[in-house]
Structure formats: structure tokens, C-alpha cells
Length: 446
Image 1: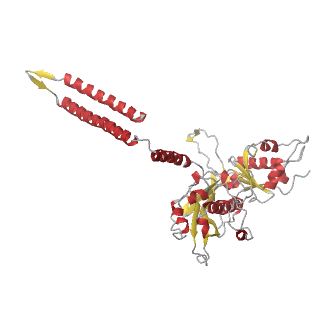
Image 2: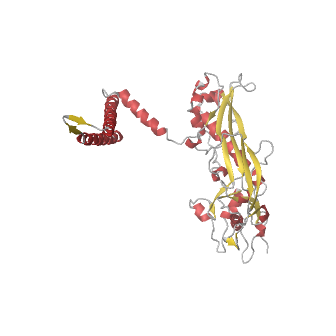
């Protein structure tokens, strides 16, 4: 019997003894008058109720003990069976591997949707798309090849296809700055609040102040704060692309997994970074943070020059101040790798690095306590400082969806298939003043 069951039985036995003691006390209080037991209606009711509880508790104890006997019989081995030992070992391995972090491609080829294809024997048209559970996977994938290597190695005899050695991938994403949130809606409706900024207070006036209890013989009038709200909609947009492959990849699982991971899913993430930052909101594009009206701006050229001219890192700190003055604490910085290189390689008058030493030693990329995402999706000469996740929210409608079909053009007669990957998401920038776009075009001049 498990420790939990034993504890439960002991609890029930204690309750049983308590009920029996109560009934004994009630029975001892019965009066005998002229050879007749005299019992009040209250005593009878209490006695009968306790007896019903005693029978129920006793039944529960017997049920737990019987269940334990059956469980022990079922778990015992009649002999040292090799098959039983193998099954137990397989179950243990399965339990361990079920907790492993897997790639999108690995999860797809292990899914029931893929297995119904029977490695191509049952046709290659999926009835329904497969959607990944991203809590069990990673998105560190790669995308460097658009065509198979040229040549005819098959003419030299038996072929063994080795995995293609790919280049390192961009691992840091703009979405890393956002908390995860999902939606089942097609359109997100929200109010964009135009609040405080250090440049223009007209958009939102904070009139909060101390107030006396009375003004003369009248209660004091409380001040009114003024805020502007604009109703907005953020439509869920679809990011997708596909790749052609030979039907044989259905039987060659590692190759199919590499197509999904190395190319399709990684390509979606590259597009996602660009849309979050630069989408113009037209057509099927997201409205990116940099294209949202009302975000603040700061020019590097406006920085101080005396006694030492501001560096790019100084410009980021001054931009963070603008977000603080809008009553939002900035939580991240996005900038181009070339601009991040300039900041990391900045030296003091003695030639000592100011930032790069901690990063070179394995420290997390940070400037002024804020995490840094360096990505080519950001235009060189521009940076974004802001309260990601507070001033804006990213909504995932479908995080990863994979479909396979041969019903495209003449793919059926060519033994070719289409592998399609797509995701659906929306972006709502609710407090634009929480973001500051930094212009690095010109250094401060004396």
C-alpha cells in the first residue's frame, strides 16, 4: 500500500474511533426507568446519524484495503519474464524521453497526424494540420539552403546521405521580450491610451494632488485628470511559406525534420521579427512598434558634449529616461548588430572596454540593466527602447502549424510534396509612449 493510501486509511480509522466513542457516550446517557430504556428524539437522531457514518467509514476502509490487494496482485510478476522486464524498461525510457525538449520537426514526425501517412504509403494529403505545443520544444532552427546540392553522386553507386552542416542561426528573438499570451479571436479590440510623455503633456494630464477635506463650509473639489483613448483593432495575421521536397522524405524522417526545423520554422521567425518591428499595418501586415503613431523619439546628436561627447550607450540611457518619464519602466533594447558592435567595442580614455568584457566572458548582453536583442530586422542606425509586454502585447493564435500535401501543380506525377508551415499572431501597441525610437545617424557635435 502506498504511503498516501496508508495515511488515508489511518485518517479514516481515527474518524471511525471518534464516531464510535461519540455513540458510546450517547448510549451511556440513556436512562432506564422501570425496566424501560428511555431515549429522547435528539439522542436517537444523533445515535442513528453516527451509526450511518460508522458504516460508511468502515466501507471506505474495506474498499481501500481491497483495492490495495488487487493492485499488489496486478503489479506482482509471476516469473522473471524477459518480456516483462523489457516492457518495464521501455516504459521507463518512454517516461524519461517524454520530458525531453524536442524540435518542431521531431515533434511533427512523432505526431499521430504524420504517422497516418505511413511514410507515404497511404498518400500524402493530411486531413488536418498539425499544431505544435511550443511548451515542449525550442525554436533554435536554421535556414541557409534553398536548393539541393548539384551533381549526380548517384552515378557512383549506393548513396548514403549525410546531414548538411549548416551555419549558426540567429538565436535571440524580438518575441523574447514579450510575455507569452494566446488568443482564440480573429481580431483583438483594445483602447490605445495616450498618456504622459516628457515632450508633450497635452495627450494626458495628470492632475493628481493633495486635497483638503473642506474648503470653507464646503467639501473640497477634487481635481480631474485628462487622458485620451483611441479605439483600435489588431487583426490576427498569418505568416507562412512552403517548400517542395521529394516524397521519399516521408520515409527519411531526419531529412523531413531538417526541412521543418532548418528552413520553414526558422524562416517564419525571421519574418516575425521584422513584422513586430517594422510592419506597416497595411494589407496583411502587422502594425509594428516602430510604425505605431505616438511612440517617442530621441536623437543621438542631441546628447551632451561637455566634458565628453555622448556614446551610443549614453543615447540608449537617455532614451530609457523618456520611457521612465512616461511612467513605464523599459524592459528591453532592440538594435542592429553593427550598432551593438559599436557599443560593445566602446573604450574609455585608457583603452579599456566599457561593455564588451562582461559579454566576452559569458555575461548576458545588457546595457543599463536592460537585455539587448541584436537583430538585422532592425535598420542600422536605429534602436528601440521600451516597456515590452506592458506597452505592447503579442498574441499567438497559432504558434506552429505544419501541413503536407501532394496536390500542387504536377507534384503528384513527379513524386513531390509540399511542406507548408504557418503561424498566426496579432500585435497590439497599447501605450506607444512606453517606446522610444533612437536615431544613431549623427554623433553629438561640440
